[in-house]
Length: 130
Image (cartoon, rainbow, N blue to C red; front, side, top):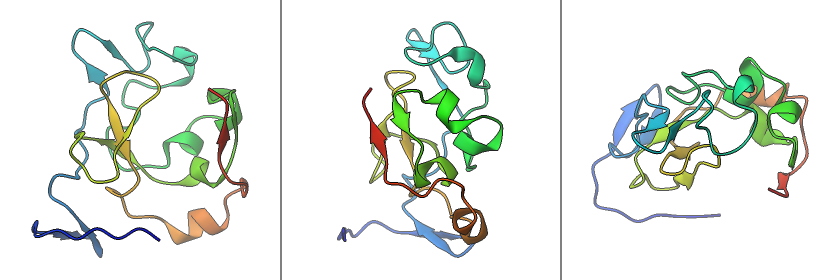
């Protein structure tokens, strides 16, 4: 269990309370570095990723792709069905994106779909070697 104490104001969207710093950026590229879905993508087969990948809250890793094919160094797990988007690096819980250096993603910025998670085909814990 992780707890965060903060005096920062919160925003309530669709029943989910999030930091105003933790909203989707709407971008999937870093100028001068690279972009998801292009040859400048740092990792993975760029043909498996759309240019709007991560720009809004969606379960991107099962939405339009095979999670195992998109992430060959990982054992598909429950994370494949979680909703997430790219966020500012200051977003609490943000994580560096493996596809493009300088992008950060967060599950905390998005509400989860309980039905999608309960019917997710992937039940194992995440395990990535790359």
